[in-house]
Image (cartoon, rainbow, N blue to C red; front, side, top):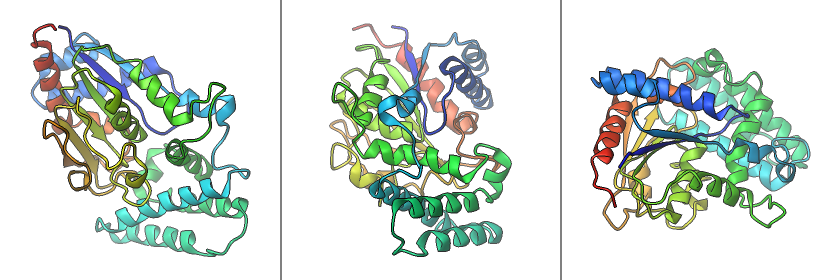
Length: 322
């Protein structure tokens, strides 16, 4: 049986699914070659190693029933959830022993975030959160990366996490935004065919929740730059509770980079229960060049990330047909 590889993206603006798939494959090919899998790397670069798909759901954030984020008309509840998300991100980075320059930026951002707690009106809070994001863009890796050109764009993208977890923004059929996103991802899974899944950023939350509805084999789930470990904002709001590894997942590897402000320190093995097969997430640190470390391609180009993915795809292809 020919195995499948599914990419699930994270926060960000609209994108071309085919171009993104090719970009992720190219990065994975680099990592595969670094890991000693030269032939598989060449096959990946040509999209000839397995059947590959890119589960795109970004358009759902900009549909008529899901307009805007981090805008002056955002509700007070949405603004407060974004504030808590930023607080968790900043505190996680401060706990990671940053250098003096990074610590100064982070401490300044935290002071801005916690100031004027009695501020009335979501508009005032949104403006403060945008200012905090502008301050965070001064971090060396983010400043050189060019992912966001303004604090407002950064706040809008980060708000996608809180919008997903709010379980709101229903469409005409009554399905909430998070339900529509999970259904979009599940539509790329083909029955019992073994599928290796790579989920980035918000996509790791989407994959974790969606896979509880999937019955096909997932030989390997890889999460990169994942915010699942944010105990104040994300973990308590995951569904189902308590958070557990989906039964279809046979192995789960979670990768984080110390310069990735979206991914907290790895506590997933403490916070996520094993599934029926005893699978729990295993976290490992990677070190990039420090320039916008949150990018999916930065992770996939690492040998320690690409190696297990290539091996899992190869083994999946050797399974007998159902």
